Image (cartoon, rainbow, N blue to C red):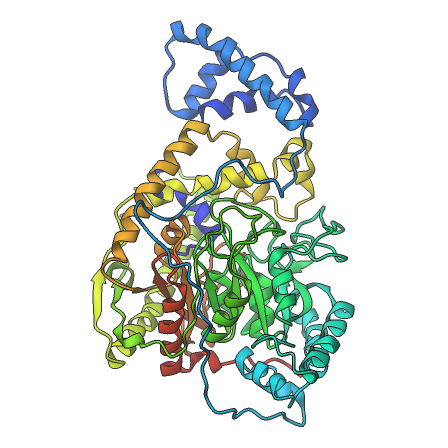
Length: 625
């Protein structure tokens, strides 16, 4: 399966998502009488009638006996009318619900004792070139060492990356706002600090890019969405404050698909540096593209259901999606309070570890953040770790079910649509079969490294049926967009885009939301049991694990795993954004490593060992100029 969020939401029917839509349906049916709904209009809605109950019950796939309908009317009308009082509060996106998601199963403990990070101590082989752009693709750890040794100044490094951002943005469309004035001032301060002997760590003086859902005081925070282009949030997100404190230099606010879906934003579609006819995938589109193109030393993205994994894969960079509750989201756009994670997108795993070291830990505002330690140790004996692999994700896909007989009365348009769908499905299966050899090569490489792989299977639970939790929370996050009709200003308006998803989510009842969360608790417990058998699990990136682990809050590292050959199946002629696995010759593939909750340091140590053995992170796209 292609499981970036946009694609997954379009295929959730496969997972048995029946329409359990009863209570929300009543409100929506009543609201249909209004052409322009708004928060103030609820009290003017027509009263719920027995006929509306019948219609809503049909949508929900349940039956309400006639003798019960009359008894329900009073309570339903009262409940519906109560919505207006809450809507009058005009709750901003920054206000979280009065509950906190905890991904830990019963009895789990976390280590809260912080230790000094241990970074790699290789010889300082990198030297300052005559042309500073020759180190544009160097790792953050290499660049930080040059700045520390004063072989390169932060000011010069920042000017170089700002130049590249300006040069390649017209090609790749990854910048929303350059923070040039702020960056140059920070760079001068970084150089002055180092000259005084005040070295803040491996990120000191390094230019970075922020996904533009992070608030930065004095600059727009657009969320990538039409209608929000001029939004200014008068605060710095916690992650921004912490990177400031680490001496890092914010060079740009980078693109995201509108309201964190896909790679299309109000200014266009962010492009893949390896093939500019393709989008960069999303929703951390700009961070992955700019990092891949050597235009920042590292970046910060976010993931709810694939938004670090998918663009990291497409753009051939390394992404770390931390354990849920490791990094505070204060000052970041909320999409799903129980699924949103902030994490680094870098060129190498140790870069990700250095960034996580700077940004993790409680800020006493995001109540989901635990007092857990991230103790990075580049010298960890990774050979002592037990390593499993998700056996099913490395096996060939099951053959598709036989096509239903073509109806005798099929029209020409229906035939054309069916044949197009069949061609797309066949092309997708061909690409999946081709990419599988890279997954299998990763297992072979691990075995050659002396790793004994333990076959494991994902829990057999209806994880796909839990995905509406995300859209329900997202619809609440952006309730006023739907209720005021401002959702018309969003760039994308298709059946799988947010405006439609938000409307559909109005039909998701509170009871079913709670039931899905109870099922999610079973998933957390079952998935956590896997990590009693293995410290690290290897998985195909584009497999069901992406949905499962985002729901259960487990961490993931996504690393480059080579480039497709000239014999790769051709990609679609047009990247519509609906399929994350479009591939094509010369484009990157990835492999994913997973670990138990708050075991991110061990996870990174193992992923780093794989990178050292393969070197795929050193492959860079060829850009003009």
